[in-house]
Amino acid sequence: MTLHPLIQSLLDDECTIADLPPELRPEGERLLRLMRLMGGEHIMVSQQVEQRVMAVLRERAARRRSLWAWLSTPLQLRMQVRPWLLGVALAGIAGVTIIVARRPQTPAAVVAPSPVEAVVRFVFYAPDAHHVAVAGSFNDWSPGAAPLARLDGGIWAITLALRPGQHQYAFVVDGQRWVADPGAPTVDDGFGRRNSVLAIDRPVAAL
Amino acid sequence: MKSLLALAVVAALPAAAQVPVAERLRDAPPAVRRAVDSMVVLAVARGLPAEPLILKAVEGTAKQAPPERVIAALGALFDRLGTSVAALHAGGLMSPAPGDIEAGAFALSAGLDSSAVAALTRNGARTNAAEATLRVGATLRAMGVPAAEVLDLVSRALRDGQPPGQLAALPAQVQAAIARGATPAAAAAGAARGQRGGGRPPEPPGRGRPPDRGPPPRR
Image 1 (cartoon, rainbow over the protein chains, first blue to last red):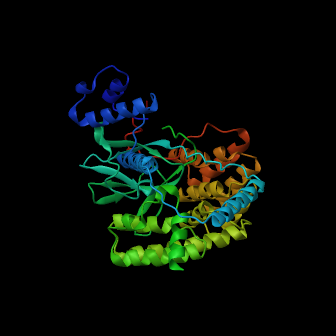
Image 2 (cartoon, chains in turn green, brown; image 1 turned 180 degrees about the vertical axis):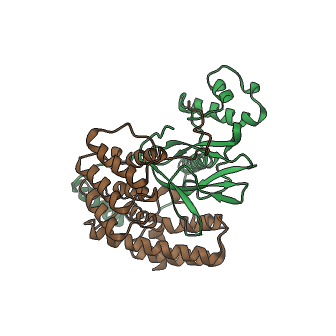
Image 3 (cartoon, rainbow over the protein chains, first blue to last red; image 1 turned 45 degrees about the vertical axis):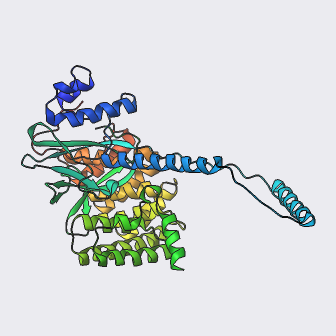
């Protein structure tokens, strides 16, 4: 994994975030935050991934809150039942219970493990660019979802956590120009350009 | 009927893609949205995965391609998905999963023909790894390895009993040889010869690198 030497020093506790030049601080802060989350792994999750995860967590929390509110609110029931009808209903419930209890037991549902994300470092050389992002099938081709950080010597880089599988992607230079990765195989994108191809078959793709 | 198919579409989409389709295509021109709607319904009716079509429309919209070009690309992809199913059937995979179908379509777009896709399927199906085999074959073809060499390398690897993880490392081995100056065909032939000798440790697939300045410093 390629890191700016100053960010490397930060991660190694040899300096603080205040020692970094302003343009490196966002990346430094993100990496520190992620290191804490990942127990020391140097991983930067894209903003889109982070937003998706937080959206899911918020939705689940809201669902749990509303379910609890419904369960904990007292209900007032008023019923008028003829005794013979009540007897029939109870007999029916008992019958259904016996039938269900006698059915052969099926194994409990197996929860499939969620696919492990792999860490991939994208590096692009564009000394004259003002902004470079990577867009691909992993972020719904959003040109703004994964901006690369500018490093020394015209090198741009970002590390993303991606799901295993086949991904296609391209670099978006200055928000306009779609450029295939010169270091990866490409395929026709159907729109007159080329997409780079990235295959992730292992949990971690170290570079 | 249409609502049932729409439900089937949602069920067929992978969990990660279950952001509402309308939201993903909010920036698409109306003609593209209509084309996606009808093609997705048709795809589900024919047992084809819908997600690649939606993703292609999203991609075309992001790249600001003209609507007619996006619709043409969708049509071509739809055809490839259908051809992929036929090739998978010819390779002996009678009930392909969506991933198998996508991998076959990707192999076709990378430059392999349907007979090569069928042959890769036949090889991969023996080890229950049709999808991985197709993706590796397609990636090798995308690197410029001729189809015959792709088939030879992959079938040799599978015959030698390589596990899917090592099979997936083949493109990296070939790419490393290409980076050292070998032609794609020679690189594939070298990797095929290395099958028996053990070969050098695999490297991951290629990533962007600055040209003419050597690799960036590694950690």
